[in-house]
Image (tube, rainbow, N blue to C red; front, side):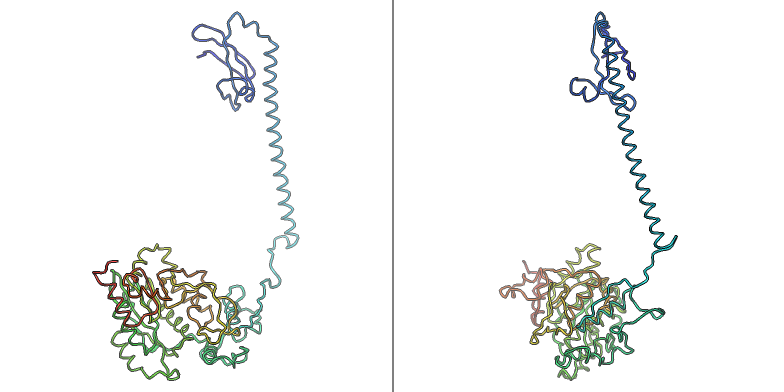
Length: 480
């Protein structure tokens, strides 16, 4: 180790080795040059990083170092320091110039805006800027355009707006009594007279969403069910309802959760050649207390009416239900599997839950012979993703949001598609679940109890099948 070594900026000072008194001399070198030619240790002096190399020299030979070499080395150090200083000045100058030009651009932009709008005015449009819609020729699409306009916070026409101008195609959006036959459809739907009778009836009452309730169960949700089973049924289908009550729709406690069951009905009318079952239905409702009935014609095209009436009832009578299964009365449902599935959901997933056998990229059928035929005069376009085929499972929270948004969607004759339209309005997409087998399972597995253990829904099954499969799944000796 060397002791007594002192280096100042631009000065070379000698030192003495602690052992034999050998005199040393040191000089500064440029960092890069020193790295290429010498080995040494790096020191920091102030803010400069330099390398110092110290070499032992005999006392008798120190006089051999010429003053010219020392002066040259000092000059190199001073030159390097000056060059570094000039580079810093250049960088600082460039940054100042950039800031100067930015300030100029901002000032020019501000002055330009003020010259267009006045010294302190905000730019206000002086004419409509919303892109006009092309009015659809299809009746449902046109009705939906009216609803979109009416619920648009920017475009909505209010009673207090003195400048509101209602275009001709919006006239008639609000009827004084929407449940009276809308005779305007006879001229607004170009092929109305050639349509099948079920379409004529649907169009005449398309705007009606409220019907009197004949049978209610106001106390069924008193205990806030964890799972509410809402089953669409017809008055004559007593055997299906009873089979559900004795099997997968058995109300009460299941897997430590409260399960409630309700059946949704309209009127089975003589127009549809049904016998008068009103007394029998009244007795059934009093006995089981699980019937909800409204006074409307219970037909295929009115299943959408049943949907909106149920959502309204849920909003009033059962807003505390955690989850809802809504399905037909000809399906088998593995209620145990539903509860297992729900148990594994995160709170975020549960809030927007809507699962089933999801159909995507579908369009209306134009063949009049098909059950789901829809004429082009009624609807054009593609269907949104929707869950079909007998049932779907969704959260109570989402059900309440569906109730709210349903008023912004025109009634459509296919209820599953209508629900998909409401989901789209909420910005949601139903999720496909492989446990929903709406097109049945392979025939070779239909009598295998283990084939049903992992499923949620199978369509379709007879009342006898429902009871048989339920007994299979609840057999303690079943091993799969």
